[in-house]
Image (cartoon, rainbow, N blue to C red; front, side):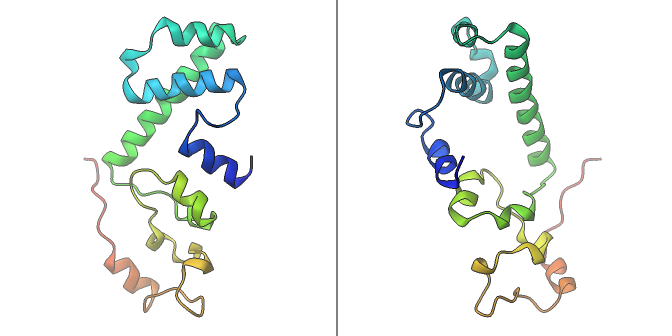
Length: 141
């Protein structure tokens, strides 16, 4: 998919031209994210009607649930998105960044030139000075 197709899909999944099986998988995953207890037989039957086996449907459930678990664990520990995401085109980066902002200070060399001040140099006196400005991340005991 092109960057614009991904941006459009994130903005409005229903408006994007997707195969019925992809639309059904996104619908199930979205329902799991919003409230797994609300998943009904309707979502399962929809995926079966698209040709997925029960094992494949279970894979979709596990993938969505694992992603939720991972996101909650990252949020609970104060982890910020990987600074390498800053290399994405600005519109794509904005569409895909949900929750905590990208921690550009974690890897200042990964800041795209388009986001740097005039001259393309990273702001700040030194890596040590930038590190001192960062907030400590809470640690799980």
